[in-house]
Image (tube, rainbow, N blue to C red; front, side, top):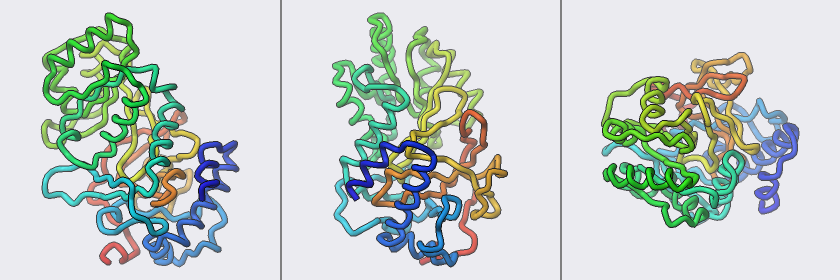
Length: 326
């Protein structure tokens, strides 16, 4: 599988992607008992699948109830989804830390270039307060590759963050600020910058701290507060290894080894191109030792320039398979 994991990051064409996805499907069908049982629930075996459109997507909720592992291994990393106290969390067991690091770094480089070109600031109070956060691991990795003395985390010390941003602006340092939504809004209520070169990443999540708002309203507030032309975002989750990115307008594109598609909300097996608004399916070929074919609970809309993420599907449930209750 080492050859396959290397090939994933050097795909040459759509045909290469599809052929590699079929190889990954057969590998995971054979070596992932949870995924294999789910496929068999629909009467699908690895020999009957010969096209990308025939590959089943595992509901993301399985990460809350099962160990989703391809091959047997002792995990080098364990990630857990964020959420409020008392919620059932997803758990992602990572077999190969180096593969995860490579995936997140290659994803970032694909869209933004070398991490060493940037200073990274993180306004992520809720993530810092919990263990096993894949986002904090990502920040640690990017900061390490950056090597900048000004890299740093901020909890609720907004005045310190304002001073640091002002200093970096005045010194013409390329800077990325990664922030959870409610914390960015808290900052925006008390401080205003004119830093058009700043890249602001909004990670989503009010976590019960503020009322939800539409993206256009949210981005308008943040653009004005930071003096930036656009708000960036990253579409990733603890159950995946790779990330899609949006540089403007909440429209996400993927690195070459990752794909987003849509499924019909009422028929999870309908993933035809005629579904323009539906629930997001993700193919993440780097997720080799877990599951590369994930049916999320996020609503999305297809655009010529990418995928728009609309929010979370309410009362999402799998239809037609009782494996959910095993």
